[in-house]
Length: 251
Image 1 (cartoon, rainbow, N blue to C red):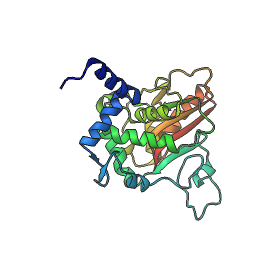
Image 2: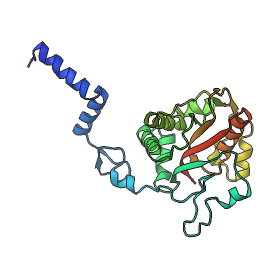
Image 3: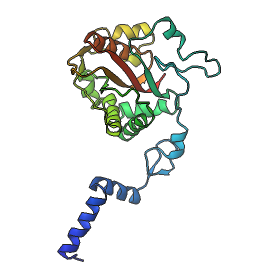
Image 4: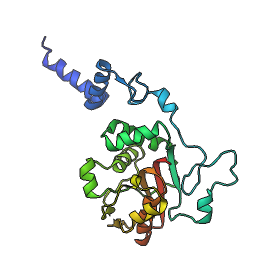
């Protein structure tokens, strides 16, 4: 069946004006082939269904400096014992999740197995839940060494940052710093001292824009804080006044 030329133009115009072609095709695909929730297997229009999203281990009371979880029944201050002894160089840390199941499954799948659908969802959730006050000048993803980037194919912290930038309009800069030393994976090291020594001289700040006063480092998982601590120190040496940290999950 052939549509008159005018009718064909009207149909195409309506599709484009109502939404993007990409969104329309995506919706059409979901209608034909509804996907399953990654966690429970139920049919869902999203990679994770609403019920599973509600059950994720969102972080509760936490240290204002390092985001380490605090026992809500024994809280006498908003600072953990470690930060009372020695404050970290970064000013404030926010973590969306505690690193427990199923986050312990979702992040490795997103990070090492190229499940960008899960990774993008985690970035979207970070954008929705992080407190953006005071508003930073720029978001900076923790960089990967070029060798590891070639192995993995993408930087998970950069992908998270792209999602946050899209939702918040806070600028992203992935050229401000780079990883100049190829190190062992932090997950392979057991002690805090090993993790800290592993990252000595690992980062280099390339450029800071004159108007930057407040930056936020974006990372996927924060364990001892060695990575963001080393990167923060480099930015402080370069003249940055305030560095905060946003991570998807905190161990």
